[in-house]
Image 1 (tube, rainbow, N blue to C red):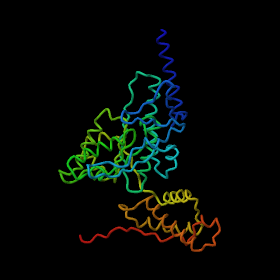
Image 2 (image 1 turned 180 degrees about the horizontal axis):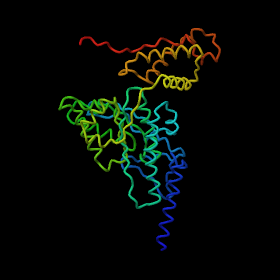
Image 3 (image 1 turned 180 degrees about the vertical axis):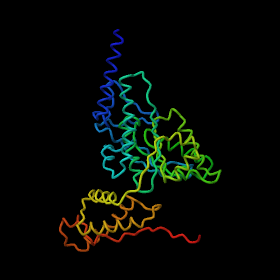
Image 4 (image 1 turned 45 degrees about the horizontal axis):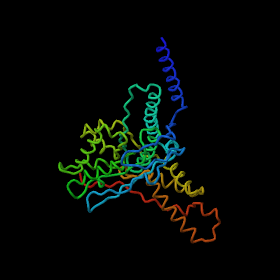
Length: 367
């Protein structure tokens, strides 16, 4: 009878924890166990540096960030981009323009990870839900895939699913070398750098070459072997690229498809969303548009959007490139006029809004 009463109380406590979690009290918040004075927190055997135990649980020491290059062979090395984890990933996710479905899906995935931790606390011997972190990001350039991948790694670190949360950005060129065996050497080094974080492979479909002997197929098989290894838990692999090409890659590799259950589609931004992105980016540099400048810019962006080529349109990247041209024009004008007041240095005028170069759709010739 006493045992039954104890179990009943335990389940009541769990129900209360779960209710609090669903209602937001635990949402996006993870309490990590701190080592006691007599205990040392250890990292994997090949990485002896301690991760910082600061309150925001966000940043890694510089020594813990892997170097940005790999050696494909004794005479050739390639650089890889390493993205540091960020301090406030949930806030950064909220700041993203659009992407509402992606935000919701990210919340669900992190919530399930946190839920597993709550269950483990309430029922230490219970079976845990299997949470696969491997994902596919569908979308054209400039739709925010890399930005979300960086947030994703940091969210998973906060949730306790990854130990570091950094992102290692790769592509076909990272793996394909000039000598036999380069692919395996490159994959081994990349996985070592991505341990504890996210391995992002951009334009992953390029690994699936048309030739049966294409070395990219070796990379895909090596990746499959990694995903099948149950000991490789402290890593999330994210494949990125255009939707049609990525879907074809997955369809041709059923094993690959089944190991990437999380699929996120990044839609092209609308004109209003691109204007909102413009305001945010300009604000970062403490610039302001005059009414006339904003009207001119908005009209030009809308016209560019109407005649865009969907296959080459850069979305937010197009906005970033255009703003760089505007900043250069603004700086040139300010230096030339010299007599400007201090506030004029931050004011973008119609004169600064340079014409937008619009990549148009190519006209087909023939039948």
